Length: 155
Image (cartoon, rainbow, N blue to C red; front, side, top):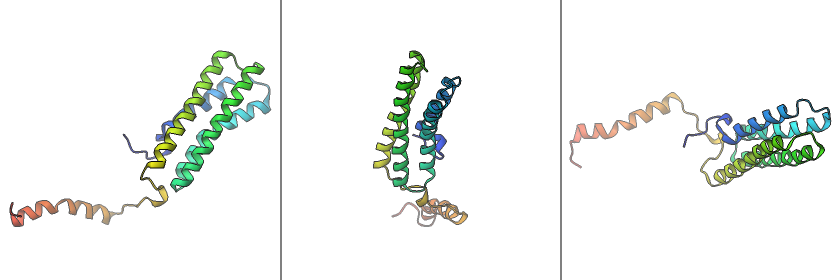
C-alpha cells in the first residue's frame, strides 16, 4: 500500500473530484440557479473538506473534516433525489451521480475507520528530516559492517 503524500493521493478525494465534475456537467443547462448553486457547493465541499482536513495538521482535525465531507456527500445525494423528482435529471444521470456520491460516502467512511486505528498523528507531528538526520541514518546502517571488520564473526 502506497503512502499518502498529498491529498490528491487519497482515493476518496479523487472520487469526490469526479463527482464534482459530473454534477457541474449534468446541471450545466439548469436555470434554477439557487438549486444548481446548492448542489454544486455541496459537491465541491466533499473534495474541499478532504483536502483541508489532510492539510490541517492533526489526526483529530482530519477526522472532523472527513465527517464534514461525508455529510456533504449525503447532502449531494439528497439533492440528487430532488433533481430527479423535479425533472432536472433523467434517471440514467441520477443513477450515475448517485452512485458516485455513494461511492464517496463509502470511501470516506472506510478512510475514517482506517485513520482512527492508524499510528498517523498528523502532519503537525511529522518530523522534518535534515541533512544531519540523513547522515546519521546512513552511518548507523554501516555499524554492523564495521563491527564485523573490527571483531570478525566473533560475538
